[in-house]
Image (cartoon, helix red, strand yellow):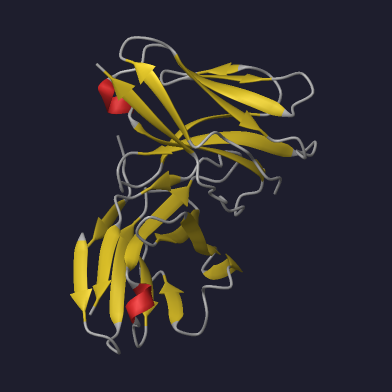
Length: 111
Length: 114
């Protein structure tokens, strides 16, 4: 699976949009971009994934650049409960394919 | 909403003892996984399981470890002869398969080896 690069930490004010970037310049054509988050030693939580089109669900939006070498996870109205480590993971879509976690981005949402 | 459950939430054991960590994946999911996270470190993949056999395993998953799906609901991780360095959070995960590959994680079992 392709390697990803994320900033180690980011801050965001409560109620504002949080934009978390990820670089995955070696991504191959059959690899998807997945985002998970981990709130203080809890189990990782699936957020969203995409291949090349932008995606939106009830939790977040995912913007993937046209060349697919980078992406941005957007939390439109961050709350204190969104404080967590966010992981950007690139993986091929196979049923048993595993998740390779990096260090992620520690997002701190402040009042 | 269906969830992955894990028991116990915290297990303390002495070095050299055997432990079994238990997981109940989401019903009708087809793929099962174990990951671990040593305190302050990254989440690491241990093993994946499908159709009653191991699909993939990492270098960490050596002969000390084994997995089993003894019935239609439970998925267990056995660690034989535990070592101090086995102390970690152990997470179970499952995914539906059949075109849906998001993995859903349980809350974890904190294993402390003394």
